[in-house]
Image (cartoon, rainbow, N blue to C red; front, side, top):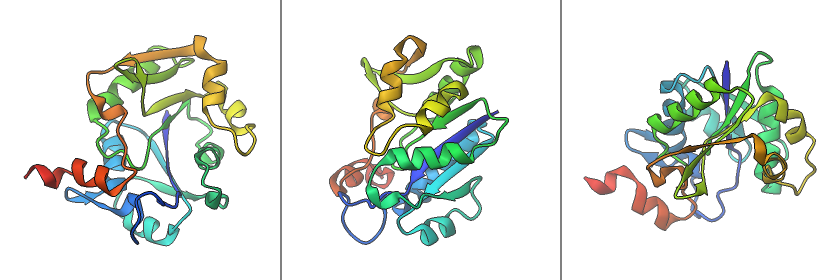
Length: 199
């Protein structure tokens, strides 16, 4: 069993405006809805969305999507680590790995998620990371044996600290799409990337 953790608790301060990034329109859905639907289509059995800022609206918009919500009370710190930790603490005990997907990465491709899952299926002790042009991207698959170490990280740390300590465990999945590096931080990035622009 694989669980996905999607941190969607941030303040979206760089995006500006009133609407949080996860709720922005994307095609026929929203940014967050598209991420969840891609994970579900890839066969991820459990999808956990970590909420914080504007949690009521985010939870409401997920009706009909294959996900459950967990609240991160420390969301205002602005640190994604606290959301990852909240997600890990809520994962099904039978899960062998946690797929860390970004809530502002609707460009995430189904084929890439499937590649990452297949790599983990081959070696469920590996820390699986997609790579494009020698750059690490998302989603990252964190094996269960690293969860306790991630949960023990102090405030102010990042998951990178765990990854750097276990480089020997990394299994890179080389992909041919820069979508693993793309996210939506600013209005300009959103306007340039949204699928409606191509119509």
